[in-house]
Image (cartoon, rainbow over all chains, first blue to last red; front, side):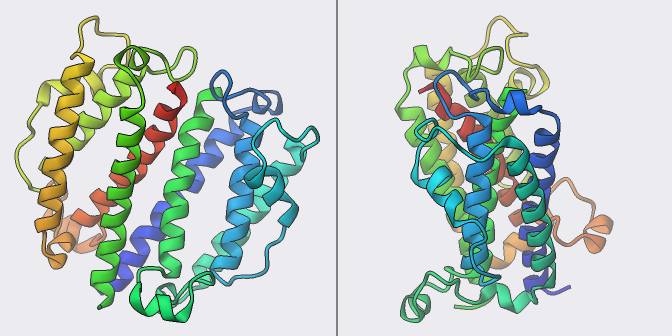
Length: 159
Length: 159
């Protein structure tokens, strides 16, 4: 196996392992528990779930997979801090969105050819990409993997 | 820049960004705060700090950098759960160990030639490595980066 294939596999494996890990946590907590803060005064579980869906929704665009599916979630779970909006999407709806989105992402990721991962992502200009070739699609997947891991470490605390 | 160099840089950049992120959190909390649990009934900050030092200490061996420096920390912060051992290393000593270790790791990482990252790490056999070439040194750095991110997400909660 050549080194490019190995490296692409390493990062996709990390993404998938972190999705599996997050799903295990999510499936082990109830909708009632999702209303709890991960620590006193901090974000609630439901906000973290919405936040991850919103960030991954933006990833669809960055990876040039498709247009953002749920732009209203960006306002609710990225622009606005937790508890600043009284009516947010329900836990059941977020669970459904999350599982649909994860499946879709898994499918799209599996269809990428290795060399496509080294293309520029959609928010970097062609000029900047020449100077910074690490600003590629694989780097988006990598940074979103550590982001997912960060919030999984928080979500697990409400168990 | 060739793709191998780009990918190695991407992962080292992620490691370094996560170390900087953790240091910012650590420097913003006091020794008294480190004695607090990240969430009621969960690990204390001081345990997480010790845990990261112990896991990164094992990484020195896995990357064939050098022998483990603090094997007694493995017992205290990996084998034993938090609050099961009454006398653990002090917060001041852990802070010192952490900063020395991070500097040393940064130095050793910067000296690696790109192709060395694709060598097998020390806990995989040569036979298994032929079948699983992704079990290389770079994958150790990658998995420890997501591990660090997971616990940084928890540590930030005691601020």
